[in-house]
Amino acid sequence: MDYSQGFAISAIGMNIERARVDVAALNLANDNTVQGVGGVSYRPLRVVVDPSAFGAMVGAGADMATQSAPPVRIVPTEVSPRRVYEPAHPMADERGFVSYAGVDMATEMVSLMSATRAYEANVAAMNTSRTLALRALDIGGGGA
Amino acid sequence: MTDFLSIEALASLSPAAQSMVKVANSVGATDEAGPRLPAPQAVDGDFATLVSDGLAQVNGRLIDSQVDLQRLAVGDAQNLHQIMMSLEESRLSFQLMMQVRSRLLEAYQDIMKMPI
Image (cartoon, rainbow over all chains, first blue to last red):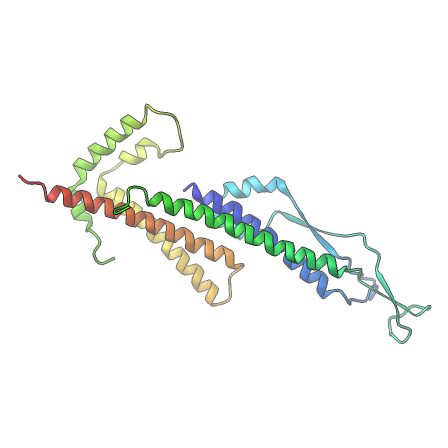
C-alpha cells in the first residue's frame, strides 16, 4: 500500500541517524586511544549520507528499507592527533609527548544531540503518515 | 475474531457485490487516472476468494509481526524501529480489514432487515 512508502522514507532516515549515533559513540570511545600503536592510528570518523541509493530503497518498501544498510559512507577526517606531555607514559616519544586521537568532544556531543533530534523528527513524520492512514479508515465511520 | 462473518455467509452476498463492483469500476474508469487497483484484479474470481485472499494477506502481516517480536525477544533484532514499523503496518492492515468487515456486515444486515 502507498502509505508504506512514507514508512520507508522515515525508516531510512532513522537508519541514517542510528549510524550517526553509532559513529559518534565510536569516536568518543576512541578519545583516549594512543596513536601509532602497531602502526595503527585512529582518526575520527564522519557519516556522509549518499543520496543516490535513497530512491531505490524507498521503492523497495519499508521492510527492505529497514533491513538493508543505510545509504551512508563513513569517512575518516583529516584531524591531527592531540599531543599530551606525559614523559612517564610507555608510549611517549623521545620528547615525552603521547599522541591521542584528535576527537573533539564538543563536536561529538553536538552530533549526538542533532542525531537524536533528527531521529525524533523522523518518528514524527512516520506517526503523521500513520495518522493519515488511520484517519482515512475513519471515512464513513459510524457515529461521526 | 470469533464473531467474524463466515465465508459462506459472505459468499451469499456475492452476486450483488460483484455487480456493484462492476458498476463502480465502469464509473471509475471514466474519471481521471490515479493509483487504483487494476480492474481485472478486482473482479477476478468470486467474492469469497476475494475476501479470503484479503484475510490471508492480513494474517500474513500479523504472522510477520509476530516473528519480528520473537526475534526481538531473543535479541536477534537489527534495530528497534524496524520492528515497530512492522507492528504498525500490521495494525493498519488489521484496521482496514475490520473496517471492510463492518461495512460488509452493515450491508448484510440491511439486506436481511429488508421487508418482503
